[in-house]
Amino acid sequence: MPPKPTGALLTKLRGLMKSSSHVTKPIQAYIIPTGDAHQSEYVAECDQRRTFITGFTGSAGTAVVTETEAALWTDARYYLQGEAQLDSNWKLMKDGLTETPTMSSWLCKVLPMGSQVGCDPTLMSHELWKPLSRDLKSCGHSLVPLSENLVDLIWDDQPLPPNSSLLLLSKKFTGYTWPEKVSQVQSKLREKKAVAFVITALDEVAWLFNMRGSDIVYNPVFFSYAVVTLKDVHLFIDPRRLEPAPVLQHLHVNSNMENGDEVTEVKTHAYDEIWTYVESLVKKEEGKIWISEKSSFALADLIPKERRTFSPSPLAKLKCVKNKAEIEGMKLAQVKDAVALCEFMVWLENEAPKGTVTEVSAADKAEEFRSAQKDFVSLSFDTISSVGPDGAIIHYKPKPETDRPVTTDQIYLIDSGAQYLCGTTDTTRTVHLGTPSPHEQDCFTRVLKGHINLCTVIFPNTVKGHMLDALARTSLWEVGLDYPHGTGHGVGAFLNVHEGPCGFSSRVTLTDIPLEEGMVLSDEPGYYEDGSFGLRIENCMIVVKAETKFSYRNKPYLTFEPITLVPIQKKMIDPTLLTEKEIAWLDNYHSTILTIVGEELKAQGKNHVYAWLLKNTQPLG
Image 1 (tube, rainbow, N blue to C red):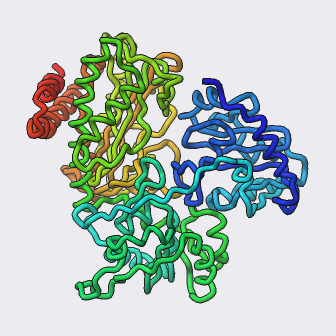
Image 2 (image 1 turned 30 degrees about the vertical axis):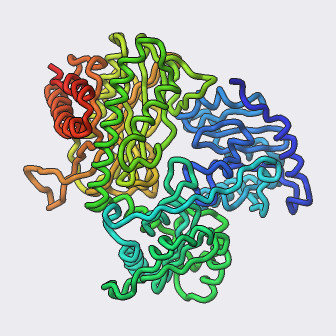
Image 3 (image 1 turned 120 degrees about the vertical axis):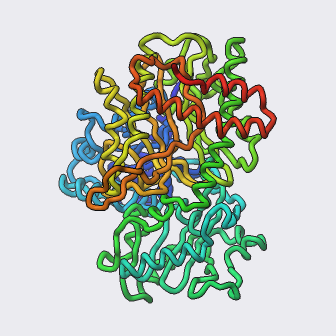
């Protein structure tokens, strides 16, 4: 499929950049971020402004339009996709390469002195706005907030904001009621000596109130803001969503319950009233107001600098450390998912040799098997179903115009996941339905060694994720190979499949926190040869206590427990590259799968799938 033609759109946008009807002064550059007003990783269709103006559909990237040029910055996951989807009007900036200029240095180079650079301040976080403004100022330019979004003005068929119904979760799934969670946040407020916390991240609002929505595809969230003070809690949301009686009852806990001093009623406001509420909060309350620096510049800037407490959100950590009920739910979700994926593998091995399976039909079939499982809600992201060279496109999404047949002579990679009421899954398996080459086996085995190396490490409880990232790469590094993405991310409990602030990456950020018992993360090293194949092995795993012979200075030690329960294809492995310890890990992992998933398959009457599982979990030797 050819790239989207963007010449006419850029002409219209450049006209608005000079129009006195829409800008106070003409601007010489306009920045279009990917995110929405909540800085979400994935955004609703109505907020896909960067995709609309560029034609590039990747989940990460920032577009910049000047009077004569247009450029898009994106990371290594999307280099190939960017090259394929951008037309000749756009310059692809491969973020992360030493020869690629930063956005600010590029603007300083191409703009005339004294230029105005415009941006919608609701779409850029405060933590990104301030350094960009500083960099531009250093070379004589200004970053200016615009009251109107210029892309919206030329997007004639822009979809309306979604307004999905709300799903209410019981304590069986969440472990805590929302009043108990509010009480936890209020304790954090007192520790921070702040009077209020402004919540802008959609998954944090959903987690706090034990509610879910579907405003963003695959992410069970809903457009909202919240504010927790030392005395009460406020929810900003479309009032129509509060009309069903169960929702109102959920947000108004019976005051006769034994809640002690807990808040038992949520004060509700219209979604757009967050702006006037924060302004009034500044005026009526004395003391610090806590807001994450990841919140939009527009909202954070309403709080005077001397009144702001800029710290990572307390909900981010509360949310990523799963409680007992959430852990049980996450494990149950993995069993459901394993049943579906084992069914899928049986189907794939039977049907692909007939020449009737394609990337698209395989993705659809995997979803069909998942949707048959109890408490299935949706996928957790677009399924990456890729054959041969498409597997080298790290975030490839199959479409009719790029659809390839799944054959017996090329590697097939499927990265997929689901949302169940009890938890979220994310699994990648790479298989060959014929005979893999020695080179493919060598590369795959090195990816597996890295996967095992990370999964089995024992570490003190002060360690952060970036300190472990290299463990997954060393076997690849030994032969001069690597992969251009992080090794893992946090996973939500029936929430966003990518959840901060924990993860494994070579990048060190200020928001990195030590790994803690109860966190759920992915372990997903890979290897990609452009034009040939892609390899990745991904499991979700829980941080658990480790038993050690010693305890240096009484520090607790931790390790990981894999909870994904899908066999790793043995024909892709070169056993001569594995140590005895690695073979023992794989055999034990497969034995665990057979025990847990095997029982569920038999309970569901899927005896033919059980027979496949029995064969594919035999010891490697």
